[in-house]
Image 1 (cartoon, helix red, strand yellow):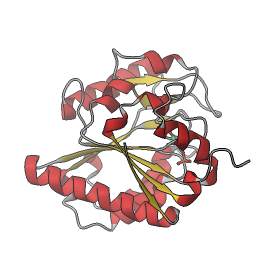
Image 2 (tube, protein in one colour):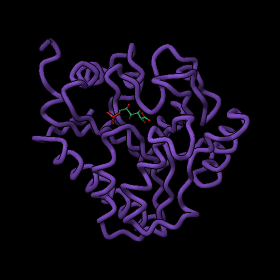
Image 3 (cartoon, protein in one colour):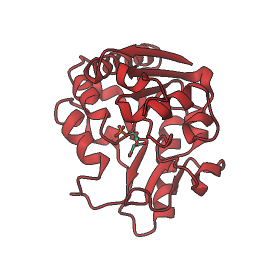
Image 4 (cartoon, protein in one colour):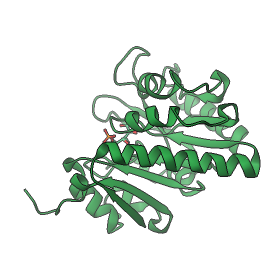
Length: 232
Ligand SMILES: O=C(O)[C@H](O)[C@@H](O)[C@H](O)[C@H](O)COP(=O)(O)O
């Protein structure tokens, strides 16, 4: 596991944008396209606003969601709303290249299967995305692979839904897709992440993020998230 520490969240966001842009340029030079999935929450948006300023051939980028909350289109809890505001309002990504999770499907199981087919159509089966951006919850969740949820054991599907978690059921990519990605980029900031980041660095399987292969992880963190785990 490669961990790079920066003074503050802004510096982490700037580096994250640079790393995603670099991965995009490499993939596009090699295969004339870049497939990327981004997480939600609060941290990503500064980074994605910085990414929007990168001079990239956006028509060659295919953008997926790592996870999404099951909530109305105008809910501030929806990651898609923030994704549109931070990245898509400033980057000329064709709408056809944005693959939003169908969380308003009348049958979420069918919706998840539809999204899996979209993934397969772009990235093969099992889907191999060039890069997946991940966050880390204080409880060690990543994507919407959340503690004590059956989704943690899903290995035969690429997209699944969770039980209600922090107010909403979620739709999420599953471990097989994360494990098959060309690169996994964690962006972790804030003092509330100290314990989870310490457990991730110990690849503690008791937390969902700790079940990922540590050798495949690049973690960008700020000083606040790397404090001593016993500071109370
Ligand atoms: O939809 C979500 O909530 C995210 O995908 C989630 O997995 C997020 O990455 C972590 O909860 C960290 O969130 P912050 O960025 O708010 O720290």
